[in-house]
Amino acid sequence: MIIGFIGLGIMGRPMAKNLISAGYKLVVYDKFVKFDDLLALGAEGASTNRDVASRSDIIITMLPNSPHVKEAVLGPGGVIEGIKEGAIVVDMSSIAPEVSREVEAALKTKGAAFLDAPVSGGEPKAVDGTLAIMAGGDKKTFDAVKPVLEKMGSSVTLVGDTGSGNVVKLANQIIVALNIAAVSEAFVLAAKAGVDPVKVFDAIKGGLAGSTVMNAKVPMILDGNFKPGFRIELHIKDLQNALDTAHSLGVSSPLTAQVMEILQALKTDGMAANDHSAIARYYEKLAKIEVRK
Ligand code: NAD
Image (cartoon, rainbow, N blue to C red):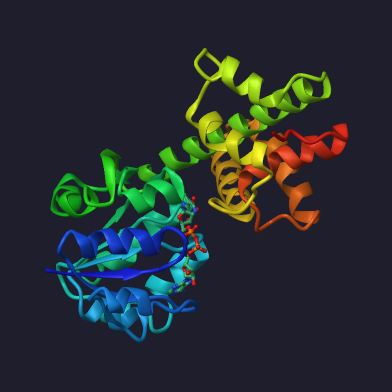
């Protein structure tokens, strides 16, 4: 079995490496970044997304957003032009649920199957192969690719029909964004009140306020290290998809909208390529204090 891997950025590159380490044969491609390191590990290189598809049985995509997935799969020189009947496309990007369903419908006309399988956990878990993977699609397709997904994630869950994986990912992204904002608001208050933020972290991380987000992001904030990780511009993308989906369903999401405005302010301030832990910078600037060791 040959696995095609398209999109070798912060997440895709270590995920592809884990598949190579597990013994799979890979054909890899990225439109904008080099991938010599993967070729050195034994992967074969492709020249286009179509080329990847024509040589693969399972094609994994790990791209920024809906337009990139549409371009790479359905666009000129895209996966759909080369895909084999019976092949499976697994889109692991975080995109709008309705685009997952649109891509699936187009692939069906070629006799190919589709699964949306976005991930949570960020770069460290992509490197460790311990991502949380939430998949949408039919059970037969899920069962066929589950052993491959298990080489990249420690939890692999079929959550519903096509598009459901991305619905769950939107829920995940709302919770993460609001959690970082809450942590930032609280730590800036404590720092401004003169309490050592390291002691704040030590005192509350084991209680009810503690969270995976707090454990991952507070050390970065304390170091003033806002290197991504997960870029603010990608979280803006996710919250936009969340708000669009909410509004199309008649759901009001006031807290998501509020954090979206914080992210927009940071983008205007030139911080779009910083890690989303830089939400703390928004509060720090308003309060004229830094939460540092
Ligand atoms: P990234 O921008 O680092 O990587 C995306 C890659 O896709 C880039 O290398 C880019 O060159 C490539 N690409 C774009 N268009 C292409 C095309 N048409 N054909 C081929 N390649 C193309 O992004 P990332 O951080 O790896 O994130 C990828 C996805 O995973 C996003 O949807 C993101 O929201 C999601 N995600 C990221 C993280 C994280 O912590 N970085 C965590 C969970 C989920």
